[in-house]
Image 1 (cartoon, one colour):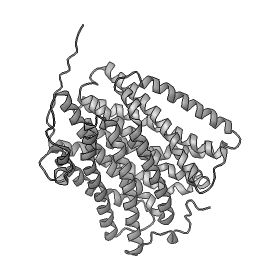
Image 2 (cartoon, helix red, strand yellow; image 1 turned 180 degrees about the vertical axis):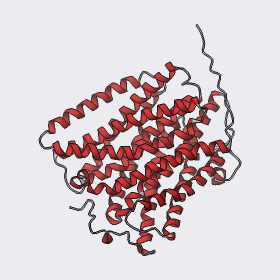
Image 3 (cartoon, one colour; image 1 turned 120 degrees about the horizontal axis):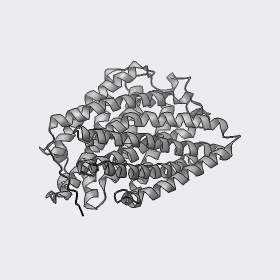
Image 4 (cartoon, helix red, strand yellow; image 1 turned 30 degrees about the vertical axis):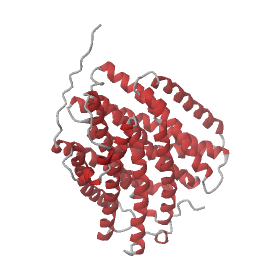
Length: 436
């Protein structure tokens, strides 16, 4: 019997290489976040949201699935690639098929559960056909978005290994670059189409749902046959469900804030996406380092108390601390560029220096909190024998969504009540989002 020995060349990554490899996809991802925000701001004119305004609460949850599923997929693939489990075509096919099956199962199940709060806590009762319309819209959006982004992630990881680039630094921002805007566009497109046929062909919606659930069952069987994905299939649900609960709360916050401050929709994907992208890079890097250390039988002598120290998170000469400083440094000019780009597309009000400073401080506050939480959470999960690749990123991005949404509301409250800017509902009489 032949034994395949993988000769992994583990080179120390320079700070310059990390900066460049992270900066380019981060800026590219920012464009996707900008267009997602502009699309969300225009969502009030789409039939799907005008007739079913409670469906807007699904937006953070479905967009969050990108963080909950695609980013965890990116982290798992990056770890497997860095550990040498994607070197041959056979290995790549095995990893790709099992992981694609896994995220299909998770996407269909989680999106189905995500509809329940929108139905139970909405402003008005859902008719039966409306319920199936919203449910199928959510399930189809999650399934198609996961398929599209999953294939993209696999291609990015393979190309990163080919060109000797660390996939930890680029996969999660690339997932985000198309994740938000594609998910939102698919939701609006599918929802608008289903809205037209829901009355006459309600049975078609039910049949389509049954087909998706059959796909989920088949995909679960495929995922259960792989040693890496079967563990996620068995034990990886709690983090995704917890994250879904948090993003559902973010959905109700988003709906309320869009009514009070209509232009806020253009900035919501930006503040959440930037923080989520950067902390996902950090979580993926730390997780890969822990997996590699275990493979090489290297034990970390530091205690959890050390990692709970904010000084260690940002100011010591440790690779994770240095990476955190670089990520914070990237965020400030990046947000400045993204903000001005949004104003170039006319988001409904003119920018001012106080608003710019307030937004940058809010975004930086969110990023600092997430990077600090990341340092603790990933290592706590590791000590508890929970794979952080599958569990840390969903919780971090969900926490970022909720905190980012609250901080953004604070920005617009200051803009309206302290800076005297015209961002309130009274200045947008033609916008009546969710009011019927």
